[in-house]
Length: 76
Image (cartoon, rainbow, N blue to C red; front, side, top):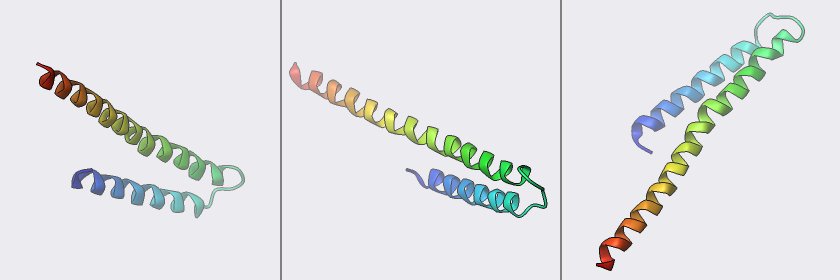
C-alpha cells in the first residue's frame, strides 16, 4: 500500500470511530440510540472491506498475467 492509502484508511477509521462514539453517546431514546452505531459499523465494513478485496483480486490477477507473459517471452 502506498502512503496515501495508509493515511486515507487511517483517517476513515478515526472518522468512523468518532461517529460511532457520538452515535452511542447521543440523547436518543430506545432503539434509535443503537441504530446509528449499528448502521455505521455495517457501512464501515463495506466501505473498507470491499476495496480491500478488490485490490487483493487485482494483485493476484496481475501476478497471473505477468507470469503468463514472462512465460511466453522466454518460450520463443
